[in-house]
Length: 437
Image 1 (cartoon, helix red, strand yellow):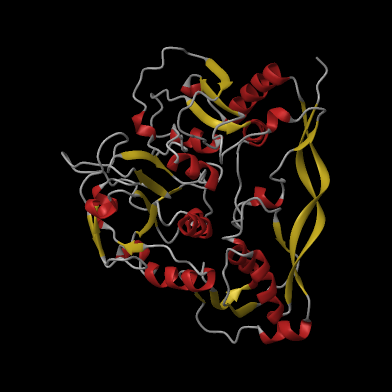
Image 2 (cartoon, helix red, strand yellow; image 1 turned 45 degrees about the vertical axis):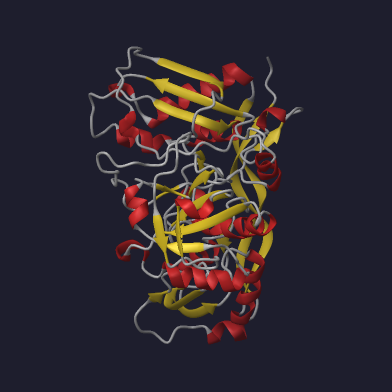
């Protein structure tokens, strides 16, 4: 099961990656009036039909999402709180992409989440506007001021009550800059043959690539010299890229590194302030840009990692080692053999609920895959999850709970003789210590 992330915390590319606005079509542009639009069948709002004219004298946050976007779904409780807090000044309008091919059932998914999370957010379902405005990545939030002018385009990661209060008070507020990623935008001729540069974040949009992903992108065109570019990365991300080759790893059972390498470096340094960063309020604080150019024929994962390691050592002087340490993890365990037997599958076709953020159902599911599903929507900030049951049979299971809430999932598992417990396991860990300069 593929888990997202470009970016720390989750921007997901939607299915129609190639969708582009047609020639002459207007798209939202910061500083310009919002292009005309109309949406029908609006729910949890005072009217069932909306357009540009519906929001005069109020701020409008048009929040586009789709059913496979875990970041979008995880943000719903926060958006709900903000809508409640600022209901007199702002309309948060959720726009769910409901194309039949990829997002069939998104309405039912939202209804289940609405009931379980007590959501009261104005929402509508539409796919035409997504295509018309050329939206490729979600969450995608278009912020429009009371005069109808686009104020910002963001993914909403840094929405806080404090920032929004300042916005309403007339202060100039910057939100995380959101730009759909498209490597084809790079068309320049890289004059330098070999060059690497590490600097404090320059204020551009966030761009973070795994090194294997970058290397593979060059295989299609050996004549093209496209630099490795990293923007707005925290220092721990850069160290993970330099020593592991990746800045994040998923809970997908096919991602072996998830079960071997602990996601968070251990800092054994006197002053860890350089590793402090902010993606919420003071966006970009404590982050860095990194770029690397070298001949395409010379590029390998190992050479890029060696170059990054040298650059980081020269810049910060830390000693870095990879060692095995006992670290905190979650384990799925059997708590009752008697209850567990009741979940053993009676056979038949394997069926898994298509939209399970609002509740998970599976029939004849291989037990080894259960851990993927029950942790899919849980925060990426949690320690790694392991299946410690050693069970190989198939199961029938129904967890009628909010699947973004670990506590509710844990409680629902008890019915099937299962539990999630915290323990410690030996894992490889990146250890960063003070160097001898």
